[in-house]
Length: 504
Image 1 (cartoon, rainbow, N blue to C red):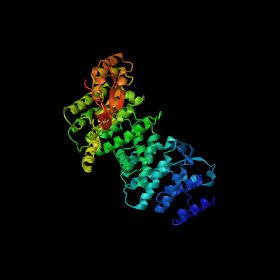
Image 2 (image 1 turned 90 degrees about the vertical axis):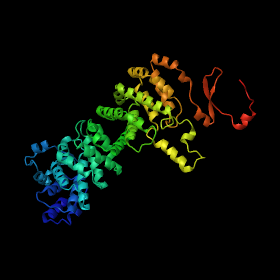
Image 3 (image 1 turned 135 degrees about the vertical axis):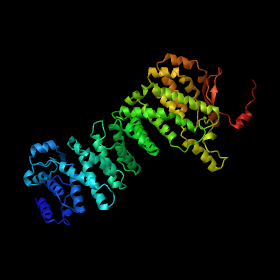
Image 4 (image 1 turned 180 degrees about the vertical axis):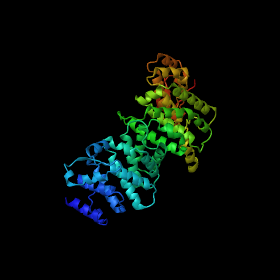
C-alpha cells in the first residue's frame, strides 16, 4: 500500500505542497478514498486550496465506482458512526483491513455534509481559486446524484442546499454553472413528481439565465423542473419579468415541438397542471393580440400570446394525453373561435395588420421601391405578432375537434364552420392557412353528418380568391358547369395577342 503510506506520511507531516502530486485523481481503491475523506473531514484542519481541489476531484471521480450507502446502513453496520460527522468512520475505512474487493458501497454522507458547509460559506464569486473549489464541490454532488440509490436525497434536498443553489446560479463563471445545472437535473430526475427540492423562483430564473449563457445542461434542467413540479408555473410565472416569460415559453415550445414531431412515444411532456396553466393563460391574455390591429406595438405582451398559441398548437397536434386535456375544456375552443372571428372581421374593416395579404407585392419586396423601404415593409409583416396568428388559431381549432364529437358540435353551434370557410383563402400574412382550413373542415366532417350537411349547403365552399395565383402566372380553371377543376397557366402576352377575341 505504497500510495496509502505516502498519503499518510504527507498529511501527518503537513507537507501540503507535495500532497496534490501524490493524489491519483481516478481510483477505485476504497482505502485511498477513505483516507482522502478522513483528511477532508478532520475537525479544525485548514487545508490549502490546491489540496482541497485535489481531494475533492478524486472523491468526485470515485462516484463512478462506489454506490452510496444510506445513513441507516452506516449506523447499523458501523457503531462508531457519529451523528453529524463521519471522520472517525473514514479513519476506520482507510485501514488496509477494510479492503474486501474492487467495487463497494461507500458512506459519502460526511463528505456531503462537508461540501454543503463549504458551499454555504463560499457563495460569493470573488477569487479564481475559490471558484475552482466550488466547481469541484458541485461536480462531486452532481456525480453522486446520478446514483440510483436514494439515500443521498435527504442531503441534496435540505433547505441549506436549496438556498446555496439559488445563489450560485447567479454566478457568471460558466464552469461553475455547468455542474450546478447538471446537479439540479439529476436530483429532479431521481425525484418523484411533487414539491420541488429547490427554491422555485430563484432556481428557475437562474436556470434561464444559465441557458442564455449557453450552458448546455440548463435547458434539460428547465424541462425536468417543469415535468417534476406540477405547480411550478402557478407558483412562479407571474413573478417573472415579461422578457423571462417569453424566453421560458420559447424553451417550452422548442422542446415540446421536438418531442411531438419526433414521435418520442414514451416521453411525458408535462403534468396536467402545467398544461392547464398554459391553456388558461392563453385564454386570459389572448385578446391582447387585437391591440396590434393598426400598429406594430413595441410591447412583449402580444408576443406572449403568440408563443402560447404555438405551444398549444403543438400540444394538441397528436393523439396524446395532453391533446385530450385541451379537448375536454370546451371554453378553449369557444375562445379560439370567437378570437378568430374578431381578427377576421377586423381584417375586413380596413387595411391593417389583420387584412389578408393576397398579392405577392404585399409580402415580397417590390423592385420599384427603394431597397431599404421594401425590406422594412416585409420585416414589419413578418415580425408583427399577428403574422401567422390566424392560421395558428385555425390549426388549434382543427386539432381540438379531431375525433371529438362534443367539440365538433360546439364548432357548428358557434358558427365556426362558416367562419373557417370564409378564411379559406391564400394569405401572405398567414402561411399555410389554406391547408389548416382544409384540415379543420376535414376534422369537422369526420363522422358528423350534420356538419357535412352544413358545408355542403354553404356557398363559400365554391370560391377562393385567386389574386396570388394570378400574380404567379396561373389561375383556377372551371369546367362548363362553373365548377373549379384545376390550375392552369395564364397565357403570356404574345399568346394573348394571337388568341381570338370572344364575346359572350
